[in-house]
Image (cartoon, rainbow over all chains, first blue to last red; front, side, top):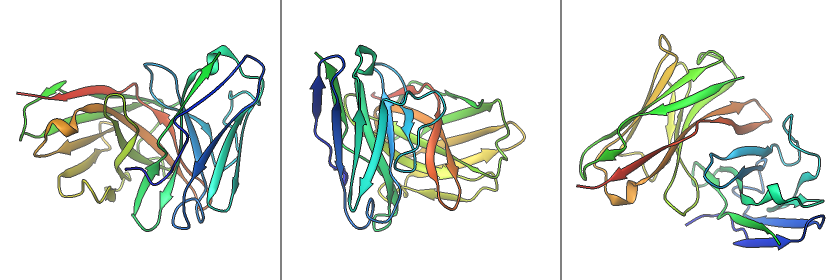
Length: 110
Length: 122
């Protein structure tokens, strides 16, 4: 059972903005940075956002991240068909003493 | 750019030990900024961190798996390995090796292997 809660699904038409939430607690998101991973169908996860809002080289600027208190969000602006994937938030949990991942959100482009 | 590749048996019998190796190329496993991690994903489910190791051999494990997990490193071969004992069907998953970049202010899994599916079945 994950300690980071995400909506199971999100969807939008091409060009729309989609936002995914990640709800945690004072022992994880509240005190540590959040990272986001994109998992395209049948592939390994890929780092999408690190340290709350930083994009690795090569990640389009339509992806953005933010964090406030014990929650974090991933936004996809100008949704494209290739953005159809599962998205996971992640951080360290100081109470559980382990890395935790969110429940995952499947993004569908309508 | 770092590349990681998992290898090992795709089928393990219940109660036996799962053994996987991750071979690192494109960089040294002795890089001081990196820990080396194992993460798994049961079919159709989410991600679970198993544990991490530093090139010095320092390890830390998921408490829920700690009693069954051993991660080791071989710097001469640029490899690190996972052993998971007493496996059951619940250990059936895609197993990924990954790098964990760590500084005082940053901590994330930035390079991932392609994954290897391990099925526990008699």
